[in-house]
Image (cartoon, rainbow, N blue to C red; front, side, top):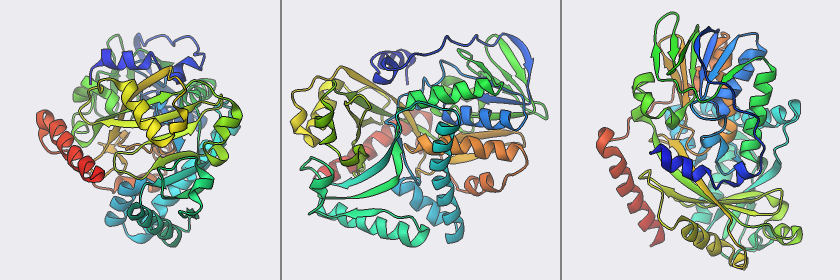
Length: 434
């Protein structure tokens, strides 16, 4: 996961091109004190900082690059209920039915919290309600229908089944056999939302230090978080850097690094089209993804572009001919867009766990970590920040529920785990294609 490659990928981001960032915060210099030091300026870190500041804690937040530079500013923009098919299965295997229901309800509350934060802080982030899950063949349609029935029975959550005769009324694509519609999930401009959270945190007196990578933590009753030029003495630490703890993660929290893997995901955006043409592509302008293991995801932007993502890389290397490959995937879904240019292509890394369920917990009594969102972080990472803040304030029940989910290190150690994952995903990808 090389930084120059990452920086290059951010230069062609539609998200960055469509926002005006405030001036960078000054880097940390010298020694300061705070009740809580948060590491990571994405959704989870900003949400924890904001929630803690509103509860009266003094908070310092350290971000290695700029706020929203990592996955929080580069993702597909889909705010989804639940933990994904695999993650939900892992939760159901490990927890009793009542606790699995409580975990699901936390994910529903995550969507409500996202909307509440948008309204409370007047964050202009182009939010649109509605999400489609789409099956590409009859076998996958049967599995999706079974999932719809399961979440209705186990969690009381309503999803609308879309049969083969109806799917063409929802999406202008012949690729899909059937689907399901979720009225409560939705989509937004993720970087606008992240910057809005940062503005709210600053207004609540959170000290945000950009270009200030945490490189070491002195653990103990009063932890000290160190950067290259400064340090934060505090009572509590919240680690919310995920895979972007990077090389320093080996010193900051080495026990966490084997439990997550960076997976590259890439996005293109078309040039603008007429509103009527955009409206005709997806009913209600809902966000969508297919249910394949290596999935495609897409949605319309507020300025009438198609944003299309997928093409995961499990080797951390950017695929060659990225624009051509991504455009080919897009045209397999929407061949009628062949006349449109693709002016933006970008990507980045999400963090996945072995079982694709989130990984929350403690290191000692006063260091909390939030990681492993596995592609479902837009809503859940914000909720994770709130749960960490609740725990620091003495209300640990909900945090402890999710921290009971067990996680294993990826096999192969530091040298072999990435090649092993690449081979495994290649096998499943070939099986899916055949």
